[in-house]
Image 1 (cartoon, rainbow, N blue to C red):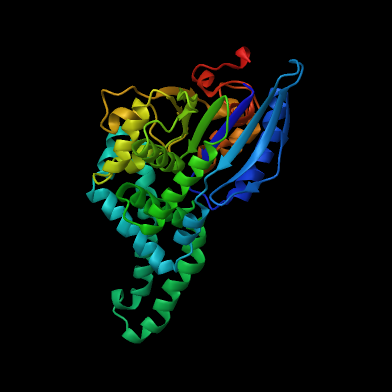
Image 2 (image 1 turned 90 degrees about the horizontal axis):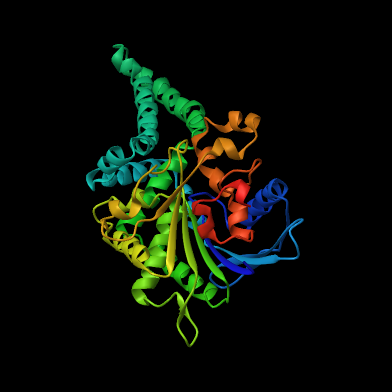
Length: 386
């Protein structure tokens, strides 16, 4: 592999392109030590629609072969910040409104049927906040409950609100509870496509992808993490609807070598909503595209995805080619002491797909996006084969 173009769609995190670049630099340095790579990561460059940086990779003690990768970032930090930046009462109300839509549109039933742990992940933040609000209400209503003079409400209501603000909220922040409220708002929007800001951003991503595809390369690697997988599916699927030959190039219309890699993907988080017909159609277009190899990377200890699911079939395309599944173990990618520290932090485990490795295993994000191997090799990759 001499030249690669990477189109990366990150998960739902408050990180802009600069922060994703900084994370990649840190993670790549770790993976370079693990895999004996000589890696040089360039500065972040910005275009009108996206941002990118260049990577030069050489495997030490393996001759003079060099792989050049251009890594495009399609972050949605502005949307994350917009959802998280609302006043607290609005964040809570909007979160519950989205949760109600997800329940009534069939999402929760699908989660519990096909990935019960993901169903619990959906319920967790809303139940936790409901308990906190209930305790706040009980404290505020204590005088009435105890038959005291209603003047006592002058201290009980402020006490309840103070406990919610200064005790319950900090406790819930340890579990990123209100951030998860925003995540479910985003999932609701990605399924229903009824938010103008989200739709405009998807259109902007499409323009950025068109720009990236003007680059010549041996491989075009589309990677997506978590919520980013639903985003990438929308963008790539809509590009295919607009132009079925978007992944052909030149006067001879030869096929580009395209890999679509979903990491801990949350496509079904959105596509299981009944109104998500556009997203389900996009899944089918990608699955049926002869130019695209689809690899779904999953992990048993990651509860925030649909482990062992057949994404294409569950999106209504039983007859289409199914995504190839590759299973990884976070435990094998990390030093034992570090894994013991993070194994109960479900969001940290979920991020490991795109972070550096301390030990050789059957997957490494840096090796896939910067190294000499085509992404399709990671469907059956072993450290011994490298």
